[in-house]
Figure 1 (cartoon, rainbow, N blue to C red):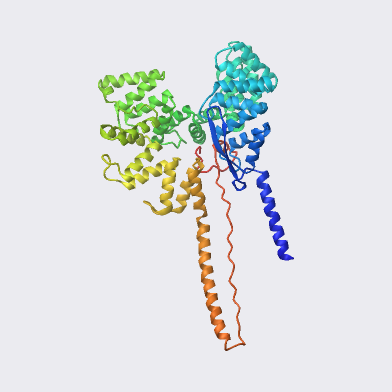
Figure 2 (cartoon, helix red, strand yellow):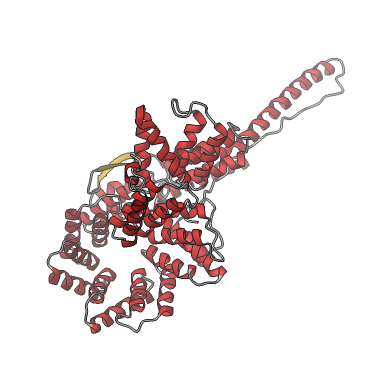
Amino acid sequence: MRVTGFWTLLLACLFLAGGAHAQGAPSAYDGHADGSVYNGKQMMPFTLYGVAIRWDRDCRRGRAEQCLQLARAYDEGAGDLTADVRVSIGYYILACQKGAGPACARASAMLRNGDAGFTNPELAGEMAERGCNDLRDQDSCAGMAAGMASSGGQGTQSAAIADRACASGSADGCRLQADRLFADTDRDAQAYAFGLYRDACDKGQAWGCLGQYQAYSQGRGVTASTSQAAAAAQRGCTQARGHRLRLCAIHGDLLSRSGTAETVRLGENFLVTACRGGDPASCYRLGELGLTRPAGARSTQGEAIYYLRRACDFDFALGCRALGQAYARATEVERDTAVAVALADKACRLGDSPGCVDAQRLIAADPGVRMRIPAIDPAAPAANQIALARAAVERGGSGARAGLDAVVRLMHEWHQDAEWLLGGWLYYGLPGLIDRPNPADGVVLIENAARVGHVDAAIWIGMAYWYGDGVAENRSKGESYMRIAAERGSEMAAAIYRSMRAEPIRVENERRRQQAEIEWERQRRRAAWTSAWTSWTPSYSSVGTTPAYTGRTVGQIIDQSNWDNAIRYYSGGTSVCSSSNPYC
């Protein structure tokens, strides 16, 4: 009875566990199926797991709520599904077609804004019209108004649609209405816009807080107040929902100019997060902090050069001008007047008149300097330079040296792609250019790139430390670098990391297996000896038992840190921000 009860209980637990898989998050343990969905650009392939297979089937049979569930699952990467906005757009489109109004608004916005790296204005308009006209979804109406406004036509009609959407409770409609009225020259209109911004900010909507900041900064619709503007930026960055990047950039900038070491340091943290999130003004401000080093700032002059390059790559004119000045003055990089001219020229083209002055002054001092500007344009985005440089090196010939020089220059700017590429060339050698490999220097550059999150470099150095290949074996470091790569989306790194985490279990299981074999052999020999002994001494017997060895699986939790986590950390909302978080 005891044995039967045990197996009955075990089967019941397994049944319940299977049911939990089936009813909960998509799990690879419950099977998989390949599929594809049209996302406004192409048929996007994907793999469904477990219960998601049923969701997809029901979606295509007309159940809009199941389409929405899949769209949100691919937005978040629910269960074993891989987060992929290119797939989620497709399911939002399907959900809209099946009758879900909110999905129409979401699909329209994603296709209009280019959330997945492409836009489809025509389909975005169709989604918005479907949601607004057929399904009476007010956020879709706001999306239709936004599309009309962005195309430059039907201004009065789009305004009327946005106003009706706002009156019906659509936050997007109110945002469009507020932005239009704020741009009006009429002070009553500006004051009404300020009221919309204030109400939205009070409800925790980031766009409202940004509008409040602008109103208080410019004195439009309300009395100007620097303190109230700063409070709106702080509130929007640390407490609101929605697109907060610009708010956090403003909040960080204001803190960095406060004058106290503590607040300067905190502002710098927000600026780093905003720069890595894609705000060019934050990158430029970090460059300023690194060059001027006010009390509390931690950025070094070397990091300043990196941040100025990043700002310039975003076509932020002040970043290009400041980087050019660094080359002209030999600040953390070798003096190179030709490179300085190229960067000043770019700043000038972007509308920065002091950049034009810089270029003219440098040329007046050295009339032939333009002839020495490198073949691979040093003012082009770093990614473009590296691609051209790599191609030139692979082609060989006279252009190979120019390719190597471009990568070396970007390495001195602390660019991680350049460090990774040059590190590999140094480690393995580069025939005709680096004939004598220098593995030690190569490892240094590769590890530098890995520290700031370069995925390929993190995988390479992680494996090197794990096996002691070219470096002293350090499995803890190997795991740490592999985790960095895994948390930046590399599935290969994630698989390797899981294997690394399981290694102690494998080692222990192997130890126990060998111990069990030794014990079994000892017991076998003892039994044979006992049998021989008892053949003539029947009064003595011995019974030996072999101990059982069991292993247990260990669940592995890899913290998935993100931008919101960094903001919460810097604003005091959490005490943890992983060192592998790309925004910390």
